[in-house]
Image 1: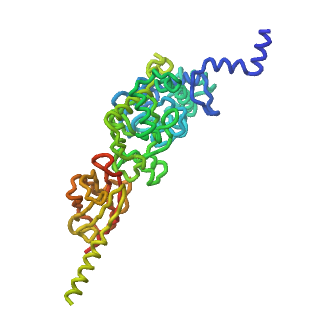
Image 2: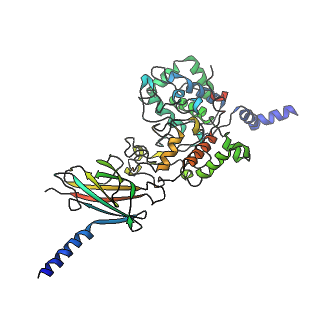
Image 3: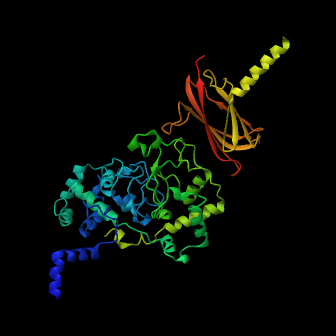
Length: 327
Length: 133
């Protein structure tokens, strides 16, 4: 009977599917052209933490996307340096649940994790390699050559490099914060102050218009009036539309307490500064979103909102071995 | 005859007063005038006079800003000038603008209450001409 079932499973492919499910971590949906496999995830994880992808082998993806800070910039850094201390323009966005987003980067330039992965590797201010250099470097490495064969059945290529990185990034899923437990019916997950803050977030403070959905982002670009004039044109670098100047994709608020500083340029050091900005009504930027206006929140109410925002933090991210570099 | 001249003079003055740009937003009525016949001077700076009424009484306080842009306001360029206007005297305030070359400009008035709830935040835009002498 057992032999019969084994034959049946192998004939239907069920056996391999069951085995795969048993070994794959919780992950965001993968595109048909890049299905998840344990081998790709393992290769992507190794590449993510390895400075081999930077010109002088000093900087890796994890240098700017630090697991200790929900895969956003390391503590206090508005903009993390690339090779030779070069600075880019923008704060690194958290990669937690990034696989569920439709518009990646602050200006929404990448529709998928695969296309996004090319940007930092080839950016002069970040890892600063050409595509040919990436491929040559990985092909010359015996360990990586073996890992690429295991994952893809062929030698290293840029396409497979970004597919492996995207596969690992799709496993960076986390929805185990006090907010999730509260939503699941555990009233003890919130303090009274945090509950008041949630009411303000979804009410008087109007935060939910842009920060909506299970990851608290509408995935759309807005000008949130943090500057009267912003030299970074944001979405307009893609659309070239004057009306899009200074618009940036609403970031997810998941783990926001772990990802300071804030905004596309990291100019706000604390969550308190962020909510004070919105409460004051922002700067009179010509493209400011009409929802940005004085809110009339009291100091106590601002404290309540900050307390609520911290319920979106999942403290297990920093200790999850699946998210840490393997030494 | 004297009465006719006085009447004509009165109509002329009234006409000028009515010509000043008066607008309402956020429950606040603002009348804007300049010392350059409601345009901008090109040989010297321009003084802008703003009179605020709220509920038909002079507005006593406003966290106002006056921005001057060349042409239409655009987020691609900073304003030529950004002036804070906080203290109002009997509902009136003045702003000294810089000397500008001939052209078309936009003055943006952004108003916010010092005390939340006194009035709704508002924004008004005025297109001003700076003509060569």
